[in-house]
Amino acid sequence: MESFILALIRAIDLFVWIYSLIVIVRVLTTWFPGALSLSLRRFLERATEPVLAPIRRGLTRLGSTGTLDLSPLILLLGIHLARSVLVRLLLGFV
Figure 1 (spheres, helix red, strand yellow):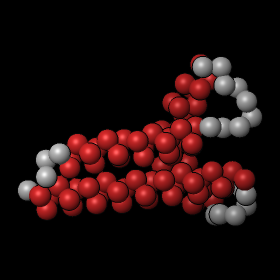
Figure 2 (cartoon, rainbow, N blue to C red):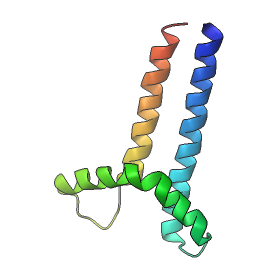
Figure 3 (cartoon, helix red, strand yellow):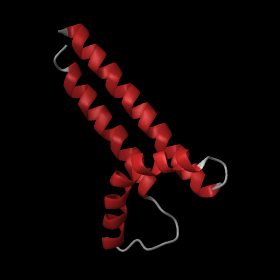
Figure 4 (tube, rainbow, N blue to C red):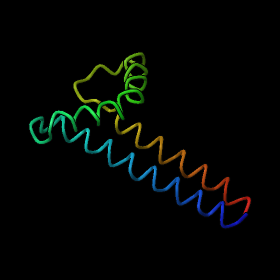
């Protein structure tokens, strides 16, 4: 059981690392729009927009209407926080 939980923790770490990289690359493509092919930009948008859109709506409701989009930062903080909580819970079973 211990090896299964450790493998699960590694999988969670890998997912969080890859998804964080996808979010960061998506942010960079907004600064440099011609840097990536259209198909890669579409992939990045499809992978991140379903999560970023609700965060943006929530920020708008809170009164954040500035030109700086903070939703990627909040998403990254959220997934890393969720990863930490999940890993601590799983380590409790070891």
